[in-house]
Length: 588
Image (tube, rainbow, N blue to C red; front, side, top):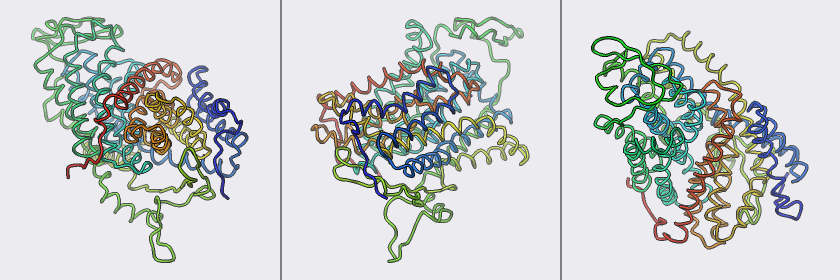
């Protein structure tokens, strides 16, 4: 069976676009407008996508069903497994008491909530994004902030806003690798271009985070710290993406920004220590003994001087407490090395390398051919230059999957911290129960995303953006935003729209390196409104049922930051064309 996608079934592009958008309208309408639980929103959105694909766009039933199943299977192994393992690592840290020490180590650096959100949500979150990605930063950093005393709503919303600028290099650079593969453009050029767009956002987002919490005056009180965090991260992001590689951009950016912030805060303190009004009491210990004072608002820095927290820890204890995340980084880095990943795949994934009857290795992506779906769906002009089949191969790389590396890191951390096998198992089962609805939601979100991809609904929405003429650099950036809002993944957005960006930009006389990079850079701002990320945030911060409130809160932040990225891309397209890289080579 072969089927060619239809992009304008009504003969009126605006009506076809409106119908193609129905799954998104249903998904976000239920989530934000009617406060329906996210897993039911995901199921309703997926059913709407299947119905529209079959009845309106004439996709055969078997192809729609298999594309949905393919998306669910992908979501389970490639995304939900990572998030589940990362939360398991966090739960082990809590069970062993190390998380309390981690909290105290951060609180010992600063008691100011504005600075804590910079350290945890932005710097630490960027590090976790670079190591694991796919929702893990929101889950881990969100739980971390609750432990510090942030309300669950603030912990979830602020982490969603923070988890933007680093997303283009999440999970060891996976989005950039995917973008290069689908566009057939040099990865070094794409990586460098993304690294010339997002550093501006990396400076803006920390300021935006603090301003979201407090007023303008209180924001400018910590401007020196904001600039240290933002500029150190931005410079590292630019340098690593332009002169080294695409794998460790976020990890190095996170490490450098954390280090710079910690060193800076040893020599500089804000005049006022800002706390939320719900911070009821703070217990501190003076030389004379223990005292208790309200902290609803501001304390002078002098008032905190001379005090120390009620519990202090040695450097060895603090290092031990942070050890699980050091182990996580090590495992994820090892799992990301091509030689190790290839060896694991060859040993454990029978479908990874298939030898044909003529003795040649089967070309194309690895994995088992998805029945009925593989190479059965064809994209056509103007989405692609000539009819091109869509591969559908499921690579069940259970051992080399990033989630497995995170899981082994959690087990190793538990063993080193003295947990018994029984205790490890009980902790994992509790994590699984707590995250069960999030796993369902993530899986159905990916099912929805894959139906839109194979039915061509994504292309219909994308083609609407191509009608914006000379403003395409701005609206093309929002095409990437739309892809992430749909799928919850910058990787998936690049896979969906990378080819369309290249073709459209060439037709309009705009540099394809710029617009393909803009797809990824714009996509990161859609991360905070995708239902998958919101579901993970609410599950990790134990406030399932508040998804609609959080979506409504972060929506305008997402659009505003996306517009800023769009303006940056416009300037590169028409003013700073010379800054678009071509022919770069990474330093070996």
